[in-house]
Amino acid sequence: MHKHIKFIVLLLSLQVLAGCATSSGTKIFTDQINKDYSNMYLRGIFNWWEAREPFKLTLTSENTYTATIELIADGQPYDFKVADNAWSMELNCGNEFGATELTLNKSRKLICAADSVNLQFTPTETSQYQFIFDVSDSQQPLITIVKVS
Image (cartoon, one colour):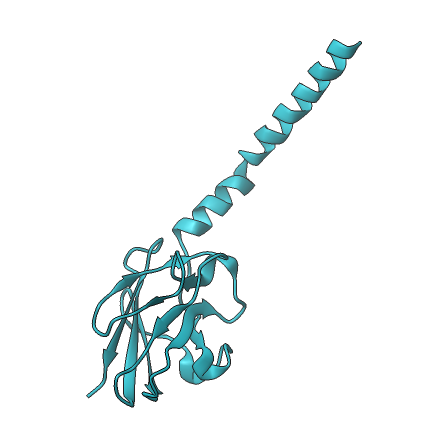
């Protein structure tokens, strides 16, 4: 009798695993390959982490989105992320490990996942800064910050 129960549990486990390999499991994998970055925002302490229109990234070339905002140079870092308006897990883009300071004109690879951590940038002068979000590699987009002259 005990062997029969183990056998039934084994069969049920195999059925559950087989169910995970069906089309719904494939959809999750496909969504990760084909992320839609068309509704992304700069979200940080400069806008109370809200998805507001002035901070929406706009398509400027085939794989590049940008937003230009004014930052005040007060010696304090700005914490921010790139995320959609719903904070979707797969579109919550930041750093992989601990908050790391971004350097002007240098690209940084991002991860877009629920556990991404904040990015930081400390401007050296009060000015307009353009945030360039390059999604050429949809699994690991790049962020670059340039000062607008």
